[in-house]
Every structure is written in structure tokens, then in C-alpha cells.
Image (tube, rainbow, N blue to C red):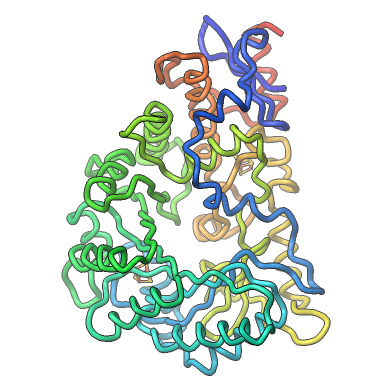
Length: 461
Ligand code: SF4
Ligand code: SF4
């Protein structure tokens, strides 16, 4: 059991094993029934990392929650933070040919049961012919009984295209029940600064137009926003973005991720501001539960979900645990963020008893060793059962899988959620306990350290 003093008036008690939260020990156990009414509900599926509890075996027929196929190494934008060298991953601008894509999919469906198939790039809409041929191929596999279930189709697109090919792209998405994830970074000035066209000029207006075109014909579109120091410098908070997406894009839920390639710690002012901005958004989420003003971001939902339903999140990151990527040259990687990185090249899908080369197995083993159930720091961390992150982003920032640059962010947001949920259940105004927990909780490393710091404050037991 770990404890956290919240004020001279009382303490919050949190058990990292069972995810149970108590306020003032004897007073109120935050029961599931009470918190159930506080659950924003309906978004259980976003907790992707919680889905997979098993590791991918080297032999047999594993299940992938997602297979990503790179069909385009070309892009029509030139984003300031692009980790993919403008979409070509340093491998040259090219589009995958349909017969090549179909052959790779054939091998993949031979080796795996696949829940969802995502088309990726660069910008995948630039290669709509390959997308269409792949969809027809998969549908045919299903019609002939060669795969038991149809995978769900998805695509991550910048939606900045135009013309006949782009119209065909939307038509294919509609015909094959795709969901689209589109990257929008906020109001026009910041979006256009972060995501300019390759040939110059902003992309916001075109993206906005295509977003509503897609929705009008019934395609579900999720917004993904990258939160950068540029937002911080311009005074745009996470909450501002949530409100912007609600008013301009008619969506109450947003996925807003901190930009990769910069470790999130509370040491630099910009990084501390990022943490505070996310905590403010979580506070708002909890304070507006069951009101018309309620807005959500996925990290807040994931945390509330875990605490309310006492569901441990199995993996830090799904890459290499339940998800794989096939790159533009047919090579497997744990995730699209590793495409073009030779040391994460897992080889092609092997035919026969094993789908995985021994080098590929060594890569997956290294990911597992650095997973939160085996990593020496994570094993005793109080936040381990709700912690999620992105190993691709961590690797690009630190050049190793063992560094965990987002710990301060993870712990602060988890602590924020715990304290705000307690306020709701106690019927107190959200925010009354102040913000100290962001630092105290966040600094506490292991359950032992945590218990010790609580002991010094002599909570009731
Ligand atoms: S749309 Fe994606 S691939 Fe293209 S430049 Fe932007 S981040 Fe890179
Ligand atoms: S917060 Fe850091 S130490 Fe704790 S489980 Fe997550 S990555 Fe590991």
C-alpha cells in the first residue's frame, strides 16, 4: 500500500497493485459503483495497450491487434517535427506497387490473425490504387474462408490532398468501412506553421474541408494533434485545443500527444508547462463529468478507465507486443517509428514453422526486457500498472529502449487523475486539494519510497 498526503486535513491512499484508491483510509473506499457514474464511458476501445496481455510468440499463429503496412514513402507536407525525413524514412520517395503489397499481405495473413490493418506512409492517400487492391484482396480472402474474420481497416492521413485521386481515396475509405485518423495541430496559424505544404503554404483549410467531406459521407474521423513547444510558446494549452476541436471540428474527444524527440521531464520550463497543461485538461475532464461541457483526451480517459474498473494496463507500448509494421521494403519492424532504423529491422516474415528470424526474436526480447514488468526501475514504480508510453518516441529521444524519458509526465498525470477522482467522490469542488500532488506523487519513485514519504507525514492506518 502506498500513501500520499494531500493536505494537513487528510490523505489519499493508493494501492499500485489493485489500483484501489482510498481517501482517509477509514472514511471512504472509492468503490467501483460510485466511480462508475464518473466514467466518461463509451471509449473503452481506445485503451489499446490494455488489450494485449500476451507477448508475440516466435512460432505458431500469433494474433496482432494491429498490422501497419507502409504503402507510401512520399508525402505532400513538410512537417516541422517529422521523424520520417519528410515521409521517406531516408529510404527514398516511392510508392509500393499493388502486387508487392498483396504479396506481403498474403504472407502476413498466412502467419497472423489480424484484428486491424492500417495503411500508413508518408501520406498513404497518394497510393490509393494499392489501398484499393489490398482491400479487394483481403475481402476475397474472407469470402473464400481463408481468413476467419475481416480485419478492421484504418488509415492515418494528413487529409491535405485534392483532385480525382483524393476523391477516390475517400470513396475507398467509405466503401471498405475505414476509420481515418487525421493530424491537425490546432488553429490555422499553428497548424500551418507545424504542417506546411511541401510546395509551400499552409494546409489547414484543405484539411478542414476534407475532414468535413469525409464525415459527411459517413467515415469516422479521429483527430490526432501533436503538442509542441511551439504551442507552449504561443500560450495554447491542451484545454484550449480541446475546446478548439469541439467548436471547429465538432468533436468532444481528442488525441493530443506530446511531440516526440524531446524527453518530458519537469526540469525545463517548456517541459514543466507541458505537464501542467495536461494536468489542467484532466482536471477539466473530471470537473465537467456528466455536464454538456464535458470534453475528453485519451490519456485522461485511459487513466480514469484504469482506476474506475481497476484494470491494469498490460503493456507500456503495444509495439512488438501486439502490433507490428511492414515497411516499404517489406521488412518487419516493431512499429512504424522504427522503419529505416537498421537495428530494428526484424527481417521479412519467415515461411514455415517460424514467422520470425532469430534477429527479429532478439529485438522483441530486448523490447520485453525493457517492458514495465521487467525493467528494474519500472518493476517497483507506483505508476507501473497505469503507465503507457511510446517506445518509438523514447528511442528517438534517447537512442536506447531502457531510458524512460516520460516518467515525470506519466506520474504527474496519474496523480492528477487520482486526486481529482477523490474530490468527485467526496462531493468536493474539483481542484480544492490543490496541485501539490503533481510534484509529490511524481517524485515518488517506488512503492517503498512512496510509503516512506507517507510515513513521515504520519497518516492514519
Ligand atoms: S504528414 Fe507525416 S510523413 Fe508527411 S511530413 Fe508530416 S509527419 Fe512527415
Ligand atoms: S512511470 Fe517511468 S518508471 Fe514508472 S512504470 Fe512508467 S516508465 Fe516505468
